[in-house]
Length: 524
Ligand SMILES: *[C@@H]1O[C@H](CO)[C@@H](O)[C@H](O)[C@H]1NC(C)=O
Ligand SMILES: *[C@@H]1O[C@H](CO)[C@@H](O)[C@H](O)[C@H]1NC(C)=O
Ligand SMILES: *[C@@H]1O[C@H](CO)[C@@H](O)[C@H](O)[C@H]1NC(C)=O
Ligand SMILES: *[C@@H]1O[C@H](CO)[C@@H](O)[C@H](O)[C@H]1NC(C)=O
Ligand SMILES: *[C@@H]1O[C@H](CO)[C@@H](O)[C@H](O)[C@H]1NC(C)=O
Ligand SMILES: *[C@@H]1O[C@H](CO)[C@@H](O)[C@H](O)[C@H]1NC(C)=O
Ligand SMILES: *[C@@H]1O[C@H](CO)[C@@H](O)[C@H](O)[C@H]1NC(C)=O
Ligand SMILES: *[C@@H]1O[C@H](CO)[C@@H](O)[C@H](O)[C@H]1NC(C)=O
Ligand SMILES: *[C@@H]1O[C@H](CO)[C@@H](O)[C@H](O)[C@H]1NC(C)=O
Image 1 (cartoon, rainbow, N blue to C red):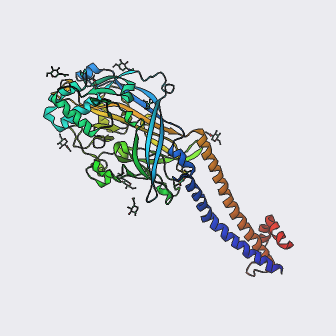
Image 2: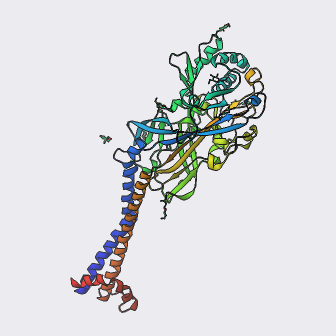
């Protein structure tokens, strides 16, 4: 009688063990990952969705400008001496407008940014500061003209002298706020024949930095006003409801699923990889990706950051990714990057740019060159051009992100980018006849995100919850094992399981801490 019961109990606890093992190995992780998916996927029922649609806190947008301190000397051929001024700090608000949901688990949206100057964070700096920088719009115009019709640069320059008022040299003395957002007026109302050509080209190409003025007789040039309050997109992004590992992946921008028309029709260079840097899928700890891709519409291409390691951020595990030399490799270092070479920026190179600089011409229609600040990770020969003011430093000039693996949330991240343009010696243009040719930086920006404490606390809470779930999983498993052991021993003692050796000391030793299992059994 007793034997039968304990045998039955043994069988039941075996069954319970099987169930516990299935739960521990498959059920719980499945439940947990479903729960996580429910919270991070792009669906209006998820916790993250509203935070993604409208960032709960502004990003910090910092601008550092390179003030040219020896303009007179540069005009006569000296190497430039620069003084970095900054940061001018802006709060950057972001909001998305959902346009709809597409086939294949996608969401379609427009992104709008909005900037507000933050005088406190800027310290003593104000938007009224006067600075001297390379005259970006002038150099862009003259370089474009020289590319199209080299022999006419001198003639066209006369038209440019009407276009740009008081054109003495290639430098711009300007207030910070005009350069960044308000805009510097340029006029199309002169009577030089080439002026119509320039203005017509500008109207046709509509480079983002040139904003037509109110009465259509000219433009305003500014670096960032096109980013303020203007919607960009539409973006089409994977929602992660079908496959969480695809969450955030951008599959189309402005209705196109490749950027290859910017890159000589090359499939590889045109690939849209990764997210818009606002959202990432959770990281599978058994298969941590060694590259993190983002699609950068400003440069019309995908970039990547490489895995640097695992660290603690705000007392949470985080994976650290950083933009490395590989991402900015020139053709010689990474032959598959050769499709990114298109236009010459200087006759002394083979059509490809040096290490660490990106050509914005194909993408933005202006002969601008992007790099990391102070040419960090770029070819060192770029530094020879300067007589001070440029000193690359990993801490100050890198681009990185720290991801929380369970949810894929960005705990901390900085994106930095410098805008440069070539100062070219052109003998037929008086303003450029004596300058030294080189890649001239104008300013660099830093876009940073740091989670507000409330969100950090929320994340920590959910981690605590996960730890409880994890504990429960092991407790259930341990209880099932103990039950099997206990009932097994009981069954063996009562002779129900003949194969079990009968009187061994080790059995009673195992039994003693778990005697209650047998007691319960006996009562019945
Ligand atoms: C969520 O989206 C569905 C369509 O996908 C819509 O019917 C529903 O009204 C939305 N709910 C909220 C709260 O916006
Ligand atoms: C920038 O440099 C010029 C000299 O080239 C100087 O007059 C001006 O005060 C500097 N601007 C700032 C904000 O330091
Ligand atoms: C959805 O996926 C299918 C199969 O992969 C593909 O044929 C179709 O073009 C996709 N639809 C869109 C809108 O991308
Ligand atoms: C951005 O645009 C808004 C509205 O047009 C304006 O109020 C704000 O001052 C602009 N931001 C900057 C930094 O100019
Ligand atoms: C530089 O370019 C601007 C247009 O962006 C023009 O109005 C200005 O006169 C130029 N400055 C100088 C000093 O040549
Ligand atoms: C138009 O051309 C004439 C002669 O070439 C010149 O004298 C005059 O200053 C020009 N007008 C303007 C507005 O530039
Ligand atoms: C896009 O991603 C794939 C793998 O996901 C990679 O092999 C390829 O090099 C990436 N393309 C670019 C342009 O980075
Ligand atoms: C991290 O944890 C340690 C010990 O658990 C604690 O002393 C410290 O204050 C925590 N730091 C933060 C930023 O929460
Ligand atoms: C770049 O410039 C060099 C020298 O001027 C020239 O030989 C080469 O063909 C140019 N390459 C392209 C792609 O324009």
